[in-house]
Image (tube, rainbow, N blue to C red; front, side):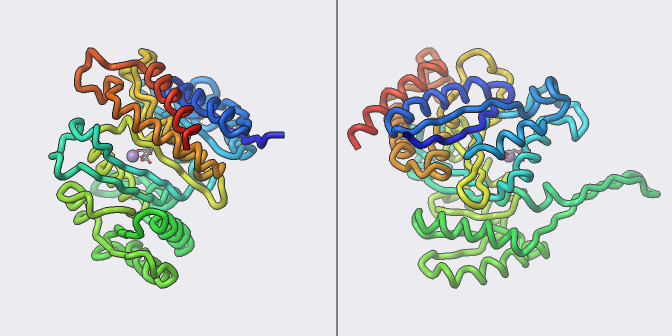
Length: 364
Ligand code: IPM
Ligand code: MN
């Protein structure tokens, strides 16, 4: 009997369903190659769940996710729900599932393939060879602290609490040291310790843990300086670890070093092997339903799922190598094509990747 992995599939909104479908096609091929079985169970999140269930994160979705080994998500959001109140916004579903499932470690790689250098808005010598990983704390900090809104004498007041517990810092920083160890053993911890108390605790915890990872070279950096250095000389970075809000901003910045957010995957991991995998890009409502979205980021997210949740490293590597080969051969979707007339559609892109996955896997 082959091993079975249960995957909850959350296509979401906009181009989400289109790109997720292509990632599932790739996983179907992996089933044959690895002699494993994936059982896919669909559920709703985001705008579509607001429309159908009256909430961006239905209980049924959480129940299904909890019963599964991993979650594959497309994207949430769109102009249709932009003016909804907070609890009826698609993004609230995303924040809710992260918190409910304890997905505290968000891994966001940003890599530049040589054949993609021309797509970046930055100079070739700056971006060629960039290969870094932003590890963002995902269930604490400003996003989840107490929010207040009240009337004072001088007018309305709003506040968001930035709170971190030592254990929250410790578990994300440990993950980061471990990831850095498997990369090039260089870790930069980013904070604002010259101003924020939560950052001073962050730094203290990082320093305490550093003695357990003597093989990893550690550096602290203030977030403003890191933002600047990321653009000036990005190749100095390998693994970056930081709190939720800084990580949100720095990971978007890092993604643009590669010039194409349509290619970047992410993993949001809990303790153990459970994780949620999604492309870094959003729901791109302007191109939804046209069959032109780039499925690469979601396919690479599925590869991360194989690696981090299922331990299928060989298949993960094969998918990544296949993507590189296809891009190298000049096949491009519209978002990354030099010559827009020659761009291929969503399905054609994934068909090319699938062809290569089979070849690369059997040769490896
Ligand atoms: C992201 C997104 C989300 C975040 C939004 C949609 C809530 O920007 O995953 O980075 O800020 O975390
Ligand atoms: Mn973001």
